[in-house]
Image (cartoon, rainbow, N blue to C red; front, top):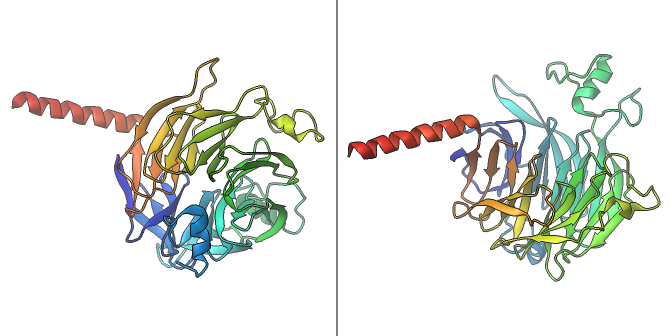
Length: 389
């Protein structure tokens, strides 16, 4: 365990790219790219979003007085960084060359929501989802360039190749300016949306709401798949689509699952377009992971090997084994407690587990074979010292 980054400001949101690259958003409204292996900040925009707005009291009534100023949502994927704030705007940034050896964040899109931005998600094709406390959930697609066919790959690298008539390469020196975004889909949820998750493979988008409900939609058409109440009488503060389930976290610390059909991958709902609920595995009852957290669950991070990390505002993180097993409840493999305050985000690349918080630093837990070997070697040296005494 180590400190990957220290900032002079509360790190409110975190997103992990290809290790060791990460994006962080601060309470003063800054967006920063960082190298978590060296602790260096590689590019910054200090005033990406305002620190505070007069309407902040409205957000506190929904999320609690812990949710301070500045960046309220952040994601990083495919060369794009997306940030959201109290100003009702999501901003899209690209990392480019600055003066000398410095890097800079260049704004390539301004996506206007109807209220405080509560979640942003970047898809594998470069589309951006934005959720807002006004009850809206929208998708913005990369604006097609001249001659580009509908449904093609619209990622920045593919867009560059299209302009140059070659294969997709993400060569910054030859990459043309980002073409910008256009809103392709708008979903009215009728309740303040507090969180969102996207499953590109299944073509689904999920959101959690201030009344304790969760909703699932077709991410292409916006067609409702299901609405249910995993945290009735509370608020659904976190959501993830992982391991054949929609997983939700409540303000009361509970984590619950609603199962999806494992076979409904990439081809739409199993029952056809007229039966969107066929995406759901209604033969399996919804369940709850135990024990619950001691504070509001604010984020999830999933690994492909059926592991899930849940993170709560009180700084606790739990690693769950969600591998399918007949008649056996999910196991909490281990928990991390007491080292974080007011945690806002957790992320993993499968080897590193990173988290933010109001202690102004990013904590890195390294589970690589190299880190394990170094820890064993250090432990052996400590034992030798004890023997000498």
